[in-house]
Length: 146
Image 1 (cartoon, helix red, strand yellow):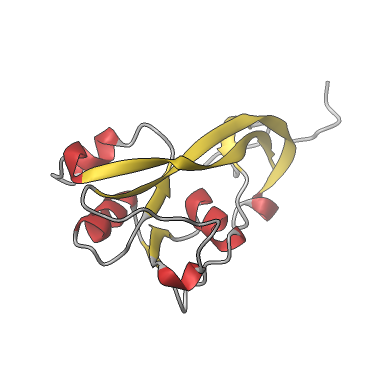
Image 2: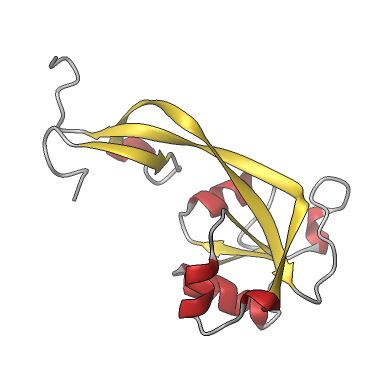
């Protein structure tokens, strides 16, 4: 909708590879931290010191999280499961079909919607990533207008 309407500006938008050509990117606002989550009985995930092939990650297709994981070296054909929505992410994690996911806080609403419990998961705060939010405008916006 916003990318179709003339003179539309969006605040707080992640700049993902899929969105790159859909907007005029005006500038960054600030970064949002992402955290690594696993099941409450899951082992520590070390994305820095271990071989990435030791882990399977799950993320929503074309999401900021999927982009971050791909930047870290994860591949869909090997160690990255992509799903249609965030409910599926947490369900896959709970079912232990993946070792971890990354998310920014808060995620409690999604967990409740999936009929899971927050206690089913733990945050590995020792590993954090961040991604900037941007101000963007629809492509039909005249950027020269003052």
